[in-house]
Amino acid sequence: MRSFATQHNTEPPTAHPTEYWQRLPDGRIQCDVCPRACKLREGQRGLCYVRGRQNNEVVLYSYGRSSGFCIDPIEKKPLNHFLPGSSVLSFGTAGCNLACKFCQNWDMSKSREMDTLADAAMPEQLAEAAQSYGCSSVAFTYNDPVIFLEYAIDTALACHDRNINAVAVSAGYISDAPREAFFRHMDAANIDLKAFNEKFYKHICGGHLQAVQETLLYLKQESSVWFEITTLLIPDENDSDRELHAQCEWISEYLGNDVPLHFSAFHPDWKMRNKTRTPASTLSRARKIARDIGLHFVYTGNVHDTDGGSTYCPGCQSRLIERDWYELGQWNLTKQGHCKQCGERIAGVFSGKPGTWGAKRLPITLSR
Image (tube, rainbow, N blue to C red; front, side):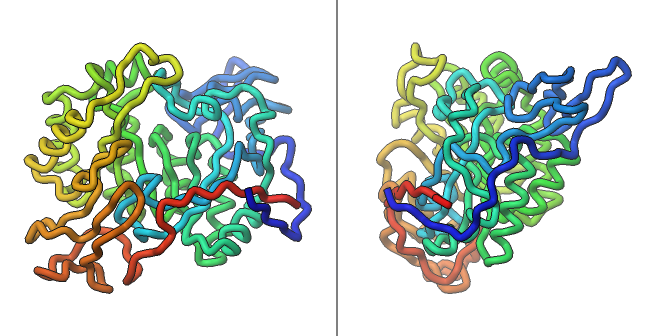
């Protein structure tokens, strides 16, 4: 593990003030960051655990604190059409505003121990570290950045001062006003569309599908954020032909055929250890359904599938970007992001040539 030394000696605050809350007639304070609308008395915390009531206001306890830092390929987020081959400094905090029984980062997202946040970095430190390591982006990931919104926004601003992108990996479970404030500062996002039925969201995630749909519609209609969608397919829960058809038809109609969609394989974890791993054939079936409906860029994840991981031209079907896990191979895009064979403009954010980071995963520390 390499260590990045910084000149900064600013310590993270014990509690950071927040904006999105209101006082209720019964004396409680309601947090308005997400549709959960936790109603708090003095000393209580919301379900996310990192936002709570202190001195008659809602504060953020995880500002400047992280569960770890790592440099990843951007494709790991996953983002296949945003600066392919580039590196991204990834970090998260603790807690989550959903309660997914299948959570695969549960050690961080379900943590109720602040000592999970053993690493510290203020926004300027993160931007400086990303620049030092040659990262094109900083990603808020591992747990949902919605719940540490203020920390993420300030980090995005510090990154933009150094021409570094801000990437959000989120379930999109956020209310209207904070949604606009949060995504105004993001350059790219991967939204986790966990299923396409309300029963799944309610009983397995403790949330509601409509709020996530509203986030996706906002990103498409009212923002300039490049976004992609991921759905983790769980056997017999959200992988039926009927549900996949409904999901893909909704994406096609309301978001357009150019939004990349990733189908990822589930592995037993957290409170869903009784389920079997997702067969590769399920991902291939889902990908075929999506492509038959008309979606142009559909990918498989968490399995070794060069065909399902590669990008193909929607015009002439030639392979544009070959991917073997996170390693890039064949590259048939022009500097302007057009297919070299037929000239079709490919949706995404491309920098003229692919990055060379590869599949490396580099944990780092940010010591003061």
